Amino acid sequence: MELREFFDIDAVSLDVRGETKDDILKELIALLKLDDKSEGILFKMLKRRENLGSTGIGRGIAIPHCRSLVVNKLRVAFGRRADGVEYNAIDNQPVHNFFLIVAPPLEVSNQYLPVLGKLAQFAKDPEITRRLAELNSPEEFLSLLEEKAK
Image (cartoon, rainbow, N blue to C red):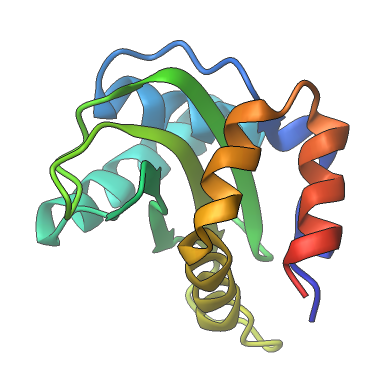
């Protein structure tokens, strides 16, 4: 399983503008191009998940994730905010890079947890944080995934 295969170039934004966790979540959800009702439901699900514990895993990275009926297959998105936002991350540092994962409650392929695990592993590499900050295009992001997220 390659992480790259789950990312669509249209679901990558290197210029996320939200100034709060909620704003960021809404922008990430918008990258999935769902209808308004589905976006609202997904936002509530992600907020519920964040209330259990922040998905800010440290090193300027957050991986908000949940299961929801608004998608019929695993969906992912990536957003970057250069100056970071307060996200209640585990290391109490601002978050700059956001990987959104949404999967249906029942998925035959059972990819949700493996993708979550692979993204967390990918994000642990100190070089990745630096390289994410240097990206100039969504294509470069996808190339980085192909190179480093094996």
